Length: 105
Image (cartoon, rainbow, N blue to C red; front, top):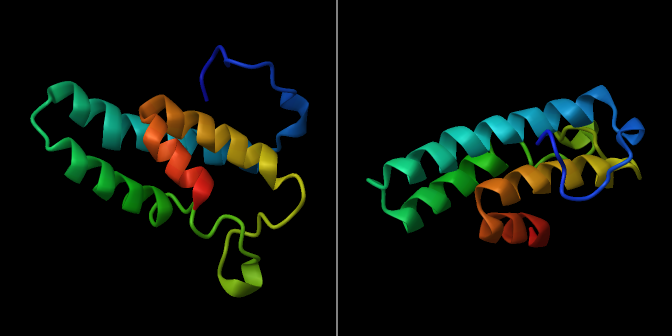
């Protein structure tokens, strides 16, 4: 999560697991998008497609909203929107198109 958010966010609404998700998405953004893009040696379309697959699978956003009984992360509670807002902010920091795709997914 960025040190200076674009919008004021009531941080008291976030639990430790929400902040941990945001930290893992931030790490993903740095590792999978920002660093390879800075080197400009990669095909951007292939980079983004592969990074989105890692975001959904390895980072776990695809299963984030599924209950644990179905193999998900158990973020099926009403306040999950706060955690996904933090995650979307970090994805958008890496690539706005990916953040939009994540929001539509």
